[in-house]
Image (cartoon, rainbow over all chains, first blue to last red; front, side):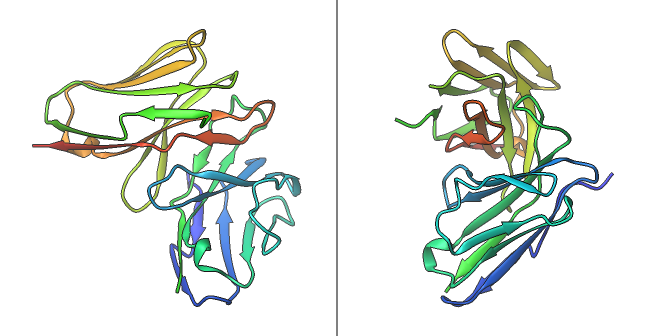
Length: 115
Length: 109
């Protein structure tokens, strides 16, 4: 079946522009995670949804970052007034259920470059 | 101190060599993940283990819960194994993962 799909794969934006990144999780997956991966680093947690509820947004670096999953399926990560330090790969992952024993399935990521 | 540490950071090997990548963590965990990331960004889950040892093809993962240490072994390495290997553990009492910085493996023919 289809895996986690992210779009766009690459996004280039000028500093100050708003961007929106999309994640289509595996159908039926309850949990959805967003991670940010800077060059040469491991991914870092941004936010977590259980169905449509955003249960943890402790990793969002500033109030310029906003995520939603209104119908408990597709999720969008929005970054307003982008800054150069926002340049990174943004990874989305989903898992069938909840709990730390659940494997997470990752998308290919969106590589964001802020000029 | 990072909660998840991997070693080595970079590793080069000749085709056929036995590879070991190490991961140490400082938090109590229910399971540890080994992930593979190819150039271009996509991450594939290799193993999730909470005790003992798991094997899949040429890949073997072991974990020692008491010592808070896990290893990923690759037998008979091949150039297609070249990738970044990342260890990750769940943050205490949550589902979110804490990742190591990864080990960049290059296998030359």
